[in-house]
Each structure stands twice: as C-alpha cells, then as structure tokens.
Length: 262
Image (cartoon, rainbow, N blue to C red):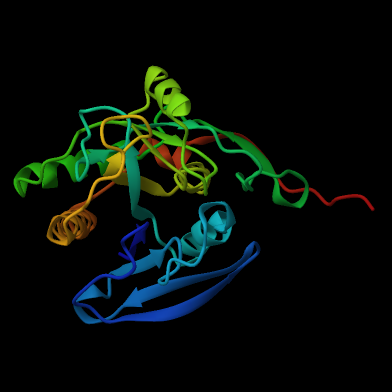
C-alpha cells in the first residue's frame, strides 16, 4: 500500500532512496510529490515548503497537497513539524507525538467543504490525529528506544513572523506544548478526506521569552533527530494495519454537491 511522509522544515528528502518528481493536477492547483523507487516504492514524499524551502507558511497550498495524496490512493500519512517549545517537557531536539491542536490562524483556505458544487459536511475533530496511527507510532518508538513525548498540543500561528513573549505565555496557559506555523489546515483537511494522518513535532528552540530563545544547534544533533524520525515513520507506515478507524467516518451529515444557480 502506498503511504506518504510530509516533510516540514529540515526535511526535504528521504536519504538513501531514489524519488522521482511528479506534478499532480488537483481541482485546487498543482502539487509536487516525489514517488519512491525500489525499496521505497511504497512511499511518497511531499516537501511542505518545497525542497529549497521557498514557500512560506501562509503561502502553502494545503488543499492541493492533501487532495493530491488522496488522489494517489494514499490513506496513511505521517508528517513532521519543526516547532518552538512552550514548556520544559519538550526541550529543544525533543520529540512529541501530537494529539491535539489550538488554531490561531486566519485567512487560510481551510476546508474542502465549501458547499455548492463541492458539497459539505461537519467533521468531528475530537481526536484530530489518527489514534490508530499514533498508537503504532508510539509502539515503534518504544521498540527502537526513540525518546518521544506520547502526547502534546500544537499551537498553530499564521507566521511568517515569530511569536511575542506575551503570546508564548498565553499559548502555554491555554495548554499548548509547542508552537508552529504549518499544522493547520493540514490536519483538518486530511481528516475531511478520511486520511489516517498523524504527526511528530521536533523542537528547534524555546518559545520567545523562555530561557535562551535561540540555541546553537549542533548539526550532528539535528541530523540524529531527523534520522530517528524518518526511521520511526518508515517502520510505522510499513507495519501498520488499520481497519474500522474513526478517521474514515469523521465527516457527518454529508450534503451532496448541488448545481449552483447563475
């Protein structure tokens, strides 16, 4: 079965494999994906910011990206996010398997359910990340002795500016663990299409006003973290078996498309 990895900041390829670029035409624009060959023929890689990190957070075409994966018949998706830490439980270079989010974005094209010719439904977001995929991810992490926090709340801001110290204090008080700029609307869009989507965030610094905000990251440390995440993702996607998961039935009260009047 074909699965997908979405790479955020720092993840622009899957080392050691041959991946061929493809452009997928969707109703929402073009999406660029990389399809694996040989031992990676079961994987598709998508660089959220582009392989040259040329697309800022607020300019990412999330709808085209997620729709493209769905059009390829992909059901299981794992995503990475580089984040700032809001609390000591996720220190820089720490990993967290996300289980909730707080959405502070605005102005983004955030849903497929537009009504009219698209139809619409109401999507249940009690568990915004696939519980089946998260469970297997944590099992694999334990087997491989990869340290990871088992749950965490991702705060999403618009970017591209960083947060103020006051905002960071507020996000932490509201229950946020990490803060980033790209988690929304990616997760809700995946859920609207019935994809099994889960995500791991890795911290690259403390949030504004917390300890020393800018840390000098050692390249070896970052590379080790990235290698661990890719190992974790590939093993999880190749060993997961999902049936009857709530992700497949998350959109309720579907209203079919109707012809729009002139």
